[in-house]
Image (cartoon, rainbow, N blue to C red; front, side):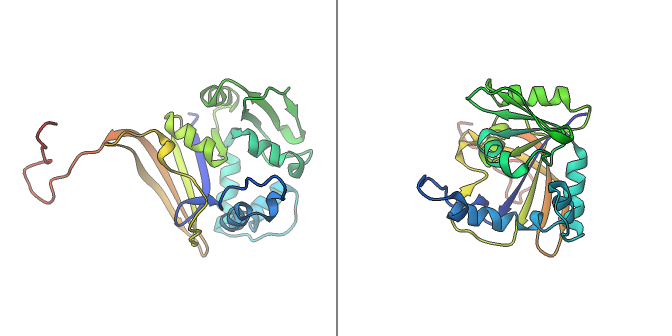
Amino acid sequence: MTKVTAQMSVSLDGFYAGPEHTDTATNWIDSAEAAGFYRVTRWATDAAAWRERQGFAGGADTSDSDIIAETFAAAGAYVMGRRMADGGEVPWGEVPPFRAPVFVVTHRPRPVLHRGGGTSFTYVTDGVASAVAQAKAQAGGKDVQVAGGGSLVRQALALGLVDELELHIAPVLLGDGLRLLGPDLGLGDKEGIELTAVRVIGTDGLTHIRYRIEGRRPLVLDNRGRDDGPVVVAGD
């Protein structure tokens, strides 16, 4: 059965990059946003499985690398945002690492872009839900991976489209930056998205936690150790 999954590398305080780069006069690579991003994703770029997919030699053959290999093997299609797709188009080259159909959420139409190794980029202009539905239809029973960036992952979570979320938590505090999870999830004052941890793997440099998304639930007071059931608040 096809699952919709998402994964992000984040700092311990929840950022997937440094403060947003808005100065068009300077290069993104020199920005604080990039510095934070490369810190939390260093584990991936150092891994043999990631480097092999990029066509690079070397890399560490570790448990982190095994997780990357597993993730690539599980994905039958991808969904990503336009900023990520545009930023990766040149670095990924003629044979991008996905080797599967990619559906790009955008407001700007563009013809399908075909690349080597089985990768294609289809530009979807009618929203995240449509992109996920199209990806499911092309995934061949494998997972649909919401690849990012963080804004797209939040949109997919808010819409209830994600079945599993995996966080790769780097042992660093960035203090400020682009936060993966925040107010724009659209939750009510007494509402939360409940998750269940289904796998936790600790390595030398990361903690990998995979969650099953249980969905939106009302937040209720517990019984604070009493045995007479949940607290009932007058007026509820």
